[in-house]
Length: 250
Length: 204
Image 1: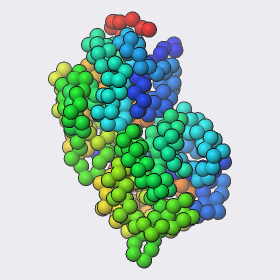
Image 2: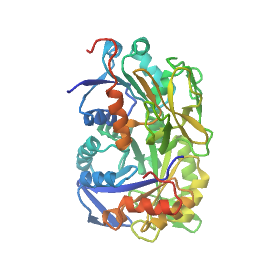
Image 3: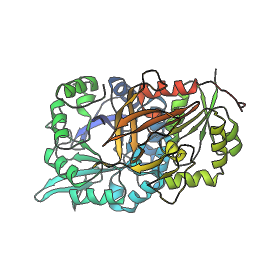
Image 4: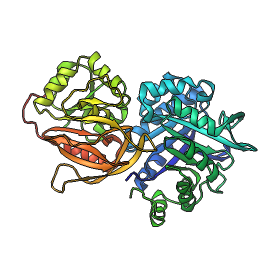
């Protein structure tokens, strides 16, 4: 049986792991390679790296970071943040990513989803959705949460899957860094609307939050603060999940 | 020992991960599109992600089909990963017009699951005394082989029904999962394959 995945997420700026609240007020959380290896040792199922700055200088540094992590890491690596073209996607895959995550560029140029999926396969094509609660459900945020759109997040999720997304990385902007648990309604709405795996992100503080995310339909859960702050190890999280009846890889 | 392992450069695979894994084995990865090398080298990995049609096209464009069939016929150590394994089969539902290499007598079909692709770690079970060890391996696939082909040792797993996780016949090993990103399980799998003895052919 396919297990539920626990995925530590490294937000990276200037070659350091950072974490904020609702994408702002970033604090330093260490060296990316050291963190990735620590989480692998603890039993992480994948690592996600999101480049939150993504200027041109940062991108060059990012390729080096990705290559350095790849050399040591023997579990899957997804890289996102500022992926704006096929060339960007190819460079990251060449540097050592197994999957690329598209976000803002997918909204601005939806054909990029089709292109990446056709060239590298659906299983390699992750679309990240940053969702903000609105009166009518959830709308998309882009540009690391700085810009709001009036695009409905559920409808968008269906469109990206039609275009070739093989996985959705679903972040609740409202819950990001808040330690108040995942947005379960959001997970349920998206997981029901699409046929590809959904990674829930934003708000995790305890293993129980993860149990509830899986119950709401998530196939994997992403967490940052709870691991970076050494509140929980991946190991500890997994044994609690197992005790709660979730099938995990131990 | 710093033995070379050649990796078929189909241009569409997660080559960096495969190369990194070979490095961690303590061996030297070399990419190749040369039919002679593919035909004769002592150890070859055929990786692959993406669609069946695109994968077969890239093999044809580099004129590698005959070389691959020939080395497999001669039992030269070969490891086919994910799409690589599917390309060894006869055909795939993914690209009905494309022909596979036909080394494995099987047809690849789409998962009948509400969640496709299968992404994540699945448990592999195998015969107790066989080549394959049980354990969790990482899968990323929408299509799979369900029927065990005659003459091959198999390892199985389940995703909306049982399917073939890996196959072995002599020095030829094919796996639907990705050993290069399957942690310690994947590394020990790769080490086992790389330790299979050469029975004929010359290293290049």
